[in-house]
Length: 118
Image (cartoon, rainbow, N blue to C red; front, side, top):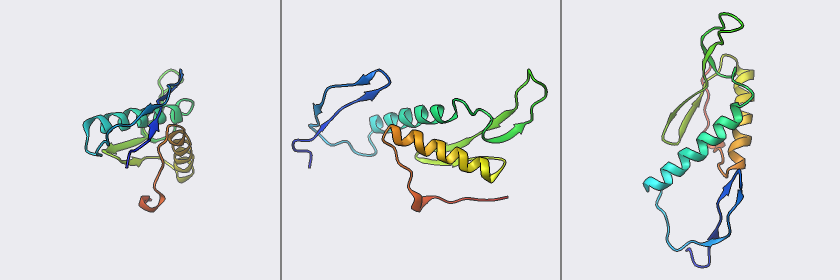
């Protein structure tokens, strides 16, 4: 399965040289979970970098100096719940997260997506 398979590491500083994959990594491997969380966290931070206001408002803005407190996601393993006050904002958040995840090689599974409207 992994005969003549190569990979490289992509970071903000550039790409590594290609290296041989000598063994498979199981999905339950702790290293895989750690790398997944790191990649997802990086993509999430990039998606929200200029849009800190996206998400569900827990505490509204009190003044120009006291920003609102928002919660944009709840995570458990590889399941993520995006939170938002409005459907339009949720779509913007989803689009930004999908775009940034694609840049690090993660893809959303549209068949598993669900939404709840209150």
